[in-house]
Image (cartoon, rainbow, N blue to C red):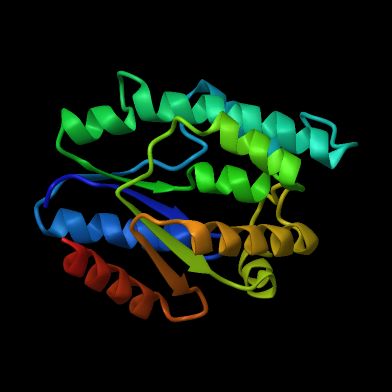
Length: 207
């Protein structure tokens, strides 16, 4: 199979990391190279984002201003993630013939960092030059389910709150309703095994 850039999207606790890992294992069993390369990335900006998300490094007095700051940081990290000369997405795909599986991409910036139409236009502009992935897999799950899944995590991130996740989910639904490229939408309340099977069936039909 020609190397693909595959993106998993969904609110926190939707199961994207689990399915991304299973997909990597599927490719490896086929004798194809595949890496997991989530956003935020492991680069300098990505590590800063993770610290902000997990601590009070930035005071959140104004949610809109915080989201705008995060949108700038995510866009900068995304550029590095795609184009850096060490382990950038396109270096891995084109030079090393490796599938790149990402949890989160610019769709997450649109869903998490926008609170009104003006902010949506701003974040779209920040991300307008980033190419669409070969395939997007969106796993939809209700916030009640996602919060139940992540309640025992050692670290709670700033966006892991029910009101925020409800808004984010609605944004994701609208984004993928309008998205025209390859996109598989799944019910995240299904079993892990069924979700993985549906993903593999979709890839095989598409290719």
